[in-house]
Length: 460
Image 1 (cartoon, rainbow, N blue to C red):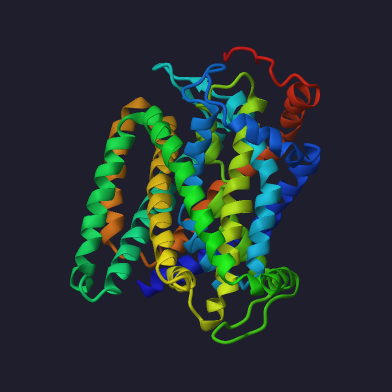
Image 2: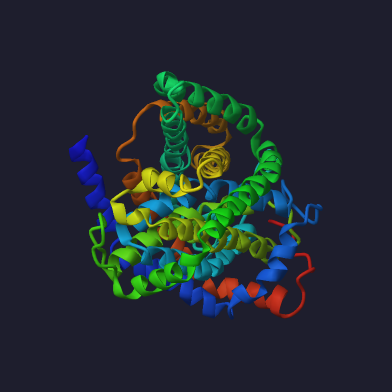
């Protein structure tokens, strides 16, 4: 297992080297300026995102598509992933993660626009879209669409399923271990946690996208508000050190962080590498996953849903990840050598009763929602490859993987997730760059010309 872990770590470092960082960040920056700073219409995008009225072809409302996408993106990456970035890249990783979110809004907008524009209606009357359809229909590169779909269908089990289930099962076990009366039941709790997650997952995903969206519309707003308010309380308690914390995050991002306490030190490239990698793991801008559910939205034209989808990156990284990063760095526990879940747990434990509750409830709801959202991504990718007959078997296999992920220790899971993210991003980023002219033209047609309420031609 140690050999496998080292091998995966080396592959992850290779994939997330300078070329991919330049491609990802470069795409974010290029699209930001090609689309004339699309981030400046964020208030309009947020207003549109709360619309639940049917306004065009599609399976779910703007709000339903957004909350399903947020369900998939707001997960362990927002909690454990941020802690992993800080432990490996230092406080500066928080700023790089935040900047990835700010510029990533443009990329999320572009990939959602293309997915809605090139989506299809399946024989069952449902919408299907995503980078695989964009690559096939817009660029004639079906082979690359197949590559993307295969990576998504397989990678979903790591990124959106087993890693999520394992995180919450281990967190519950560690929480129970801290109470003498409950400690004897700690090890067995992973089976109980796994069983409950499995049952709830089965009940929701077997009903398809409409069932998933219905649950996410209620769960996502609650969990996000609850977690952000909890982080705000933690920061309010130690408000005096916040200015120094912000200064440290900014300075470390561009100068690196020297060794301090149990922290071994990190250079600028480490801060950037881990910040950008965890930023992508969290908000998925450029990854190509969120556009799959964006394609199911009821929208008059591609630009309206693209605006709505872009807000997902804002909420996920610019708000939620930033709050987590501030809490972790402000706590000072990152200097003790703690990493991952242990660092997060120590930071939130500073607020004795409320902190662990916020962390446990936040992680539980984040995990469950991510499992739901990613099940749809993986299912649609599998359907693209093998047709509708694969949907039910895929859902059953997904439910089984939730249980397996809960009870099996996954030492190499984060490295695997990084590798899968990087490989999925490449074909999607290629399509975004090649079709940036299409995105710019659609944006001019509907947004900058004031025709946002116009209805696009019917799907062919």
